[in-house]
Amino acid sequence: MSPRKQPSSLFKLCVRTSLNLINECCFIIEKNYADIECRESEKHIILLKEYLVSLLPTRLFDILCLERGCYRYRGDPRIQLNVLIHPSMSIFRKSDLDNGIPQTFWVQVMPRFTHLVVLDLKFICTDEILELIGSKCLLLEELNIVSRVDICKSLINASVLIRNVSDSGLAYISNLKNLRILAMDPPRNERASRVGRCVSQAGIIMLISELPYLEELRIESCDIGSTLINTDVSIGPLSLRKINCHFASAEGMRKLVKICPHLKELSITHLSANNKDAILEEIALSDLRLSKLDMSFFSHSDSLHRLLEVKGSYLTHFSLWEIDHSLSLDEVINLGTSCPNLTSLCLITQSNYLSIPRFFRQPKNIFRQLEVLTLGNERFSIEDILVFFLECTLCLRKLTLKFQTKLSIDNTLIYILQKGYFKHLRSLWLDCTLEVSKDVVKQVIQGCEMLQLFTVDFTEDMSDVHKYIADNNLDLKLGGY
Image (tube, rainbow, N blue to C red; front, side, top):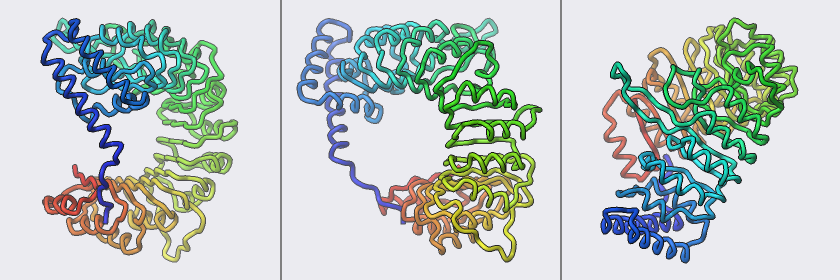
């Protein structure tokens, strides 16, 4: 049976109680003064803040700010923030309620954030705010500067998105030499034309070349690898550890390895006419020691086999979206042999050759450390291939099954439960094409001691199952489509 919900820790109860009391005090102040910026209102805010500072340890203010989104304040969030922001805070992440706060407030607050190590201002940032961040928050190691988005009407009465961060804003934060993680907007040529401020590829290149310890650049829908490869500016070596590249080529991969010699996680998608095998040969010949490799629209060729033989011992995460529909069981076994340290594996294929022979002898000591497994899409026997992996691994914690054809898997799940293969499973996600009866859903819940997340298509009324979960106080989220 799924684990039961545990009571909140004493610490969590204290945080919740403290926030509720602080929220009540803030709301009383707001209710008594129509103008929250008047002198009397500010006086009471300062008194409340001084009282809290005298009672609570400094680090608790970090936690109170992080948790305030879970216990929503019903008034103006500026009052709550003025009370909770402490000059020695190390972490600040905005909540969704903060998106409507005017820029003037953040301009006033930013000079107090001199000790911050983590700052998240997603959907709040502007160039004016970045100017202050660049001069006042010099200890930052993680920063989210995704721009505030304004919406206006164009001449043809269509909605137009206006961003508020430009290359000028990026130039201000080039002073933050300790940055390791940066999240930001995509450059303007990655999407349709926009009005207002926008960052450019040149601005991004300029910024990352000025940040010596930057390990991760998070940009939604941006091909960071191609941006680095195609720049005319001489850059590198950089400290980046994670890169995605959608239009890879052998020459481009060779250049990317020189620019980012410390890469640990690489995601490549073959969307061009370039030779796939040549790209893989370049990775195999490089000095990279990748721990994570995601490959989309590639095939399990001899070049991939050689790559895995050379680099497989370093890999803990591997993903292959196979495009030639030729993946065989021997190649899967070779993958397990070449990559003994895999903890996460994703195989997406429509191969007709992925099958288990009648008198097959299960190999030993492959996929033993596998904790996360994703399998899809069709044409192979889900039961045979899934059982193959489950017999290999000792501690599978997350399983995702994707399929393109309607298929009942009741018997498969019953067999797996009888064998005890789901003993350590915490998350099970089944595609909406996979049909599971209500009775088997109940058996999964009762037979998996650690299951906490279960997604399955509901073909019957599940109200009694949800009631069973509630009545037994199970720590399980059961969801459908």
